[in-house]
Image 1 (cartoon, rainbow, N blue to C red):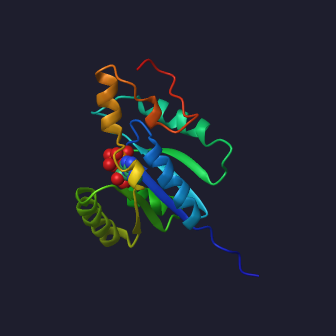
Image 2: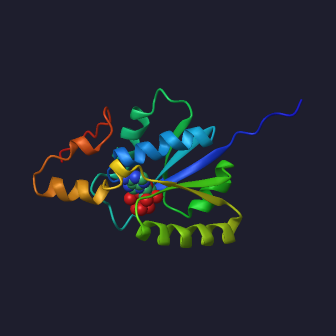
Length: 159
Ligand code: ADP
């Protein structure tokens, strides 16, 4: 009997931090794919707000009970990671026409490079205003930002 192939998607991003908007993309991605691999991107020259290893550890704990979600650290081309993992698709979220214009271009480049196609999920209207940069901005000004993260996600650093 032919073995059913696992349908896997890579969800790349900085996730600095991971918000309810990101969690919603993962949740809906799991309705389309057997597995979603969250690829936490980092740039050695731009350490970011939360250290990348902490971003990865927090997400691994958060999704520990969900065998269909994997979390990896990644600093290369998303299509190379997708090919390495045998993932046929890249998953991304879209909040606005600006996001859409950018994602369309990236999807085109990635398909051209490798044949790996991109699935875009529109943000839920009530989550479309959430972004990692808004969280960082609120934190910077001492405002409450914790409600923008999914319940149960914890970073173990002083912010
Ligand atoms: P990047 O730096 O690659 O844009 P982000 O961590 O900011 O990475 O976002 C990763 C992905 O999640 C992107 O596709 C982005 O559009 C999407 N995303 C971010 N916030 C939301 C949200 N509130 N709802 C849906 N998708 C979102």
